[in-house]
Length: 198
Length: 190
Image (cartoon, rainbow over all chains, first blue to last red; front, top):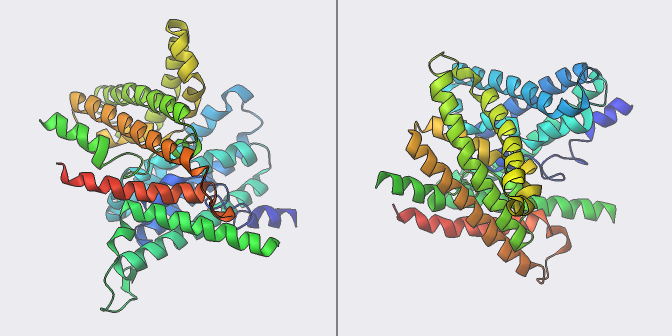
């Protein structure tokens, strides 16, 4: 039961993007199309689950003073694997994501989970926590990219969803649109939470 | 001329915060007050310029000759993490007033994605040494500019009547969006 709670807390209650406001760079940068967002979600989930697994295994061997450096090296190793894999099998996606795949290293969600959870808990709980956080991150990115792609180009994952009458709202796929959409989504998220509490 | 174009585009057109979305965490976290935003901006510019040049040297003098390009991410992040520590100790020893001003921001900079972003982008854009230096300087000043403008706006926002659920991150992001729109106007410069 407790493990289930660790698993689902990242979906909504402690959603890494909407509630903790972490990992903003990829959330804003790669959500101009759903395809890019899916690639990013996959890469982040792989790195997060992999490094949570390793960190929870080695958590008792690492001296406290060097723990952050150790975590970063573990994370950087997984990021390199993800980066090389994408470059080899999905060159187009890798080019579209550009520097944002290597930048997963400094994504605060990942280091945050290692520091706050994986370094203090067992393997199963840590992996479930990482999986739940990845799902929460995924929900946020899918929401962001769906809104932006539908409004900005009238398509969803490359499929046309709005008819020819729709004039694409170009700003939505530009940087400014990313800020607006995320700002409004956080607003909506807070309002929903408040309404349910009250 | 070429260098000027790189500098202007890093500073205004492809502003690191408003175009590349790098360094958003301090942008949202530290931009409450004007003076702390300015110090943070200067600290970032300082570390960014050193980090970009050192990573450039490591990449082209060490990784490329030995075909170790895949170690790029690991080596850059280690360089930046240790560099921040060295810079912190150096400033503390040489200039205590500067340390007073920048001190508390330096440790935060390690996890600032803008620093790693600059190092990665210079490799991606295949800049030479001088171009890297100019690019990093422009990017750092661009970050300072964005965070200082933002702090100025947020100081005013404190007196505005913002809806309860929009306070904090929400209104900051929407303001940043308007700022990004304004910065789009610079794209006609080059």
